[in-house]
Image (cartoon, rainbow, N blue to C red; front, side, top):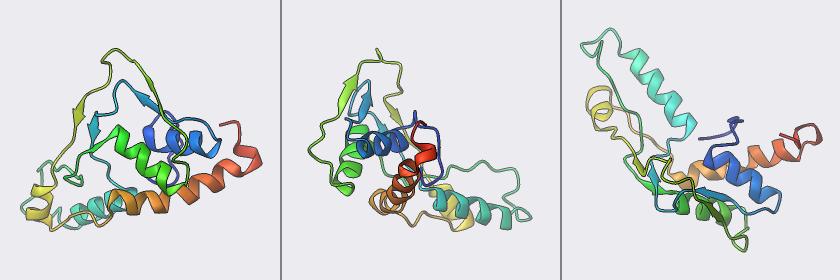
Length: 146
């Protein structure tokens, strides 16, 4: 997640867009589904570190880049709502009949051990850097219909 992601079907951009418009954010399936949200700058840093080590004995290894922290859909929405001062807008849940994966997360332990990489942004810190970009983008008249 992070600035510039225009896939508004994803929870972070969709929640910011909905709250910015004064509409309730949407939870698909259930609020306790968990994911591991990696901020875009941390992901870029991970790939740079990996590229710098490609001539080492790690060539051919697969890596997971993550935060090692599981965050529920409900917590994602409440964190964004709080950061946008929109706590009064209650989310709505759309029953997708179990189409969503309930738990999806990874571990960066191998990346830490072999390439000395770990993320530096907490979810709260990444959201604080993400929200202003979307608010500016969405409030620009030419982008309102997106």
